[in-house]
Image 1 (tube, rainbow, N blue to C red):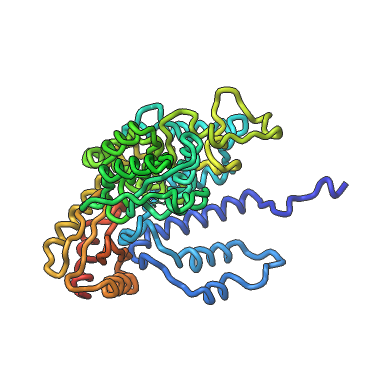
Image 2: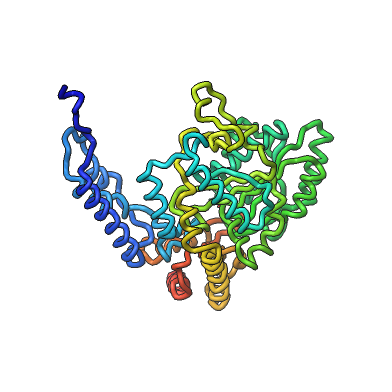
Length: 459
Ligand SMILES: *Cc1c(COP(=O)(O)O)cnc(C)c1O
């Protein structure tokens, strides 16, 4: 009898749930308020972290207040703060609070978006959010998609779906493609000999004439050209490959065009970005990361395909134990990806779009584009610095005159060690550069100037 009336060993009294919930909300809001005064990258050694957070697996219960405090004060400060206004490295992740709220709400409801039968609500939120973003990007309504964990997974799924549609064969990309693309190809079983590196032009864009030649040469050699990967906003420089000209080639040759817009595609919400991203709508598949320039907390990476059903044809999961949650007509999102149990990543995106509107997102993206242009002017005005690539979709790169690769990385490291900012030191076709990515709408011109002042001083 007692066993039947057993209390949930993991249960919590509702009053306590509310109290702890408020503790967490207060922690997060306090963090966001204090963020500007913290170093953009929090560091700690593994041994210190293990001493404070580790030890033997706790056999007995302890206070969640203490544990929450340890997470907030020890673990969660020791990381790169993608939302920090002077986190200008790699790609910032300036999460909007509406997105944070959406993720909390979804987690609290243990939201799932796998099948229509088992998750009609979250599934329709995903389909609606995908349609809203599609419309905002100016894509035709035949584009359909799914939300994966990020750009790497979206591109991996895209290449798998492409291979299903056009068969195994040669893949074409440039040196400016994100490193997740060769990794995806390798792990999908492509051999090195199936990957063709197409030359780039002086502006680091895919050379279309060279692409056409490579395809023709491969055909003569008896190889089967299948997929071209183009980048719409490269991580290095914000460069967009000439999409209309590439699409003319892939269309004529019957190839699949995958466009990696993980970073740059949201630029198409703005007037200047729409011009730079002309031809996005010609992609057979397109990756777009909401956890970058659509201001979502990690993680979320959209994959769109132009032809309806292209994902289902590659990924439909056939299992007799799933037939009771399979529906006729309504999409089962598990069939558009490699995940079965999937968190409902669209809830946060839907809430953000409803809260701020596309206009709010557009203004925030525009601010990032304008800020990179300000950075460009500020770099050009300093004799110690030299502009290497102009402001493109929120990215600008520059060099310190007379400094070599090691000195560039030393300056980058010093800026970070001093807690001034985080920026990337990288290499562009053999040339060392520093790079700023200015997509955080909380970053302002004074932040940029302070960083450039500090670099000039160190130089
Ligand atoms: C960030 C990025 C990726 C990888 O996306 P993740 O979300 O980090 O997996 C791919 N391509 C480009 C152009 C990117 O900027």
